[in-house]
Image 1 (tube, rainbow, N blue to C red):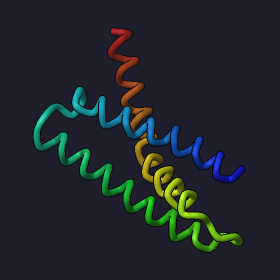
Image 2 (spheres, helix red, strand yellow; image 1 turned 30 degrees about the vertical axis):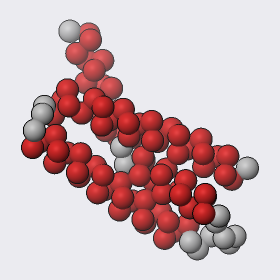
Image 3 (cartoon, rainbow, N blue to C red; image 1 turned 90 degrees about the vertical axis):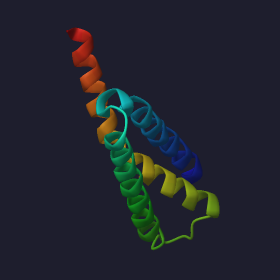
Image 4 (tube, helix red, strand yellow; image 1 turned 45 degrees about the vertical axis):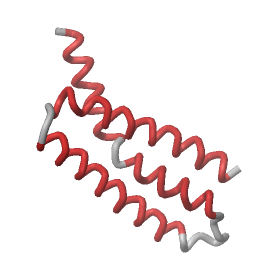
Length: 97
């Protein structure tokens, strides 16, 4: 059951990450600004994923390798969720104009 929930969470958050990286070029433009923004998101996601793995290591039952990968992927994608909402709001505002 735990693995199934982690799969669903990882799928949702990685979808948010893919959406952000796809739509980012329309907001940040092309070039250095886009690359910097993507690099910051990837570094923050990697750091948050590492921290989540460290926290998951103290769980009462040991996690399987798949579960550890899913925890990292979920945390990586979670960093992108606020950006997804911001990009969605910008898109909706632009569509209303």
